[in-house]
Amino acid sequence: MAEEITEEIEETPVETFEVNYACLRCGTIVSNTELSRLPEIKCICGFRVFTKVRPPVVKTVKAI
Ligand SMILES: [Zn+2]
Image (tube, rainbow, N blue to C red):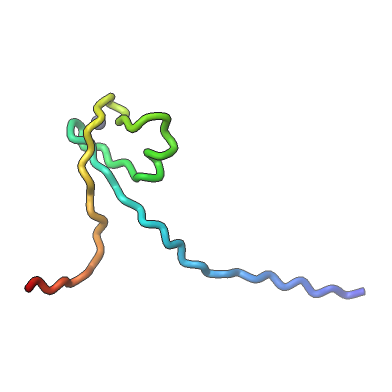
């Protein structure tokens, strides 16, 4: 019995809206997925204030 095993490799684009946050104190960049894993939103340095960092997306937006 010859069984053909075909491995299907699906290339599914992961559509996760990853947002990076930078610590205001030390500048450590943490992604929102990493932050959600933490029991509390807190930087490794202990600071809790983050600023949103925009991912480097090449996009031209025409401002009116
Ligand atoms: Zn920090």
